[in-house]
Image (cartoon, rainbow, N blue to C red):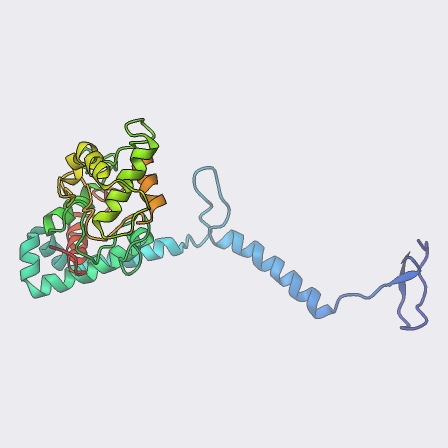
Length: 290
């Protein structure tokens, strides 16, 4: 490494005195405009820290000289919006679900409000179009685990399923294999029997009579003798070709072996009663409500 600077013969620029493998480092200062801009950004950042909320504290944050907060501004806007909606939402809160569906103005309000709240709270699981996903029901069809009437939909939204709420739906699919109630060959047999109820193909050598017997002894108590399901227990209809987790043999075997117990959160306490009614009306209006 060189220990003194010199003038580069090619560029005419002074060097820093540093060299690596015969390559000399030129001493080329940054443009003045660039340095000025850089110092301005430093001053701007310091001023921003002082004027606006910026630094996190143990349980809050610095408020800044202006005390401005975009979150607080949104809260004010939402409060103003609620004031505008006030009388209409009050009418929605006091009306019964049946009366809401009979009143065109209340029905339009409930659907609009319900659609917005659904997008904010329910779409992450059920999809923006409420078409569902694996483990999350499609709300557009006429297949309902816990019932599809207005009152039943409101009950489900309000208290959820296996949510921890005292009034939540609690039915659960048992783990017949994991808990040793059925042996693997029996599970394969009854899985194929269940698939046959929806007209799906079964594996070669499957014993239909044995599968029906296993179903009658272990599954009919919840799903019914005709496998049409039971909304009081959240047991799905196994004959309508609608599958929550999948209809292939491996998935059905997994369901019977390990059971299922999806959770629907309770929205009571998170959403006000009028909004829950609006959600129920919106979901019911999607096309699958009974």
